Image (tube, rainbow, N blue to C red; front, side, top):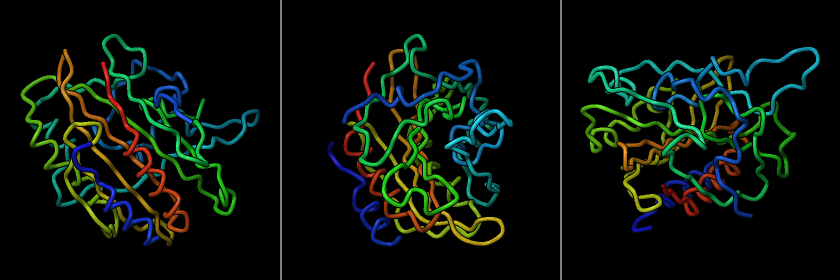
Length: 244
């Protein structure tokens, strides 16, 4: 790694067993395309939110938040330039392999992995039961076909997060992850009904043999578990490997 984002996450953490990331997935509907290139933490359409009287409550429940705002986003760019976005899952033909070292105290989301995600982790370590919301890290991978400018994607990478209600950044910076250009941002935002959520996002742009890919890693928790969340996101960044 030529340059890491660790200063951002180290500051964020102060404020507040090796696996493939795909193995964290739950084998959902791979035919679904993502609704945007950067909305995993706020999608409300995932089947992972569904429960029944005979099924245990899911470990991972993505939050919903208003992402409209003055900051342009990757999703806006995709729509405006009529770029085709294809959601990628482990095992798809030509799909990249995204590998990480699982952070201590984190487990696979298993069947609770959202259908739109490449993979997901949930926090099960010390203090995991001290809050009603389970801290989670969700990864999305998309292939973009059309007139895509990689530099433009990275320039817009933080827009969605900055549009979150009352978002307060504790740091943001460009750099590289797994040897590819990346952008990292972390901070807190306001929850409906009061309270704050900790949130971190890393966007990695890389070329494959059949097109340009975007990996987005979204990490979210209650503010009280922000330290554990940002430490885990830092560990993911340090160990991230992307291969075809």
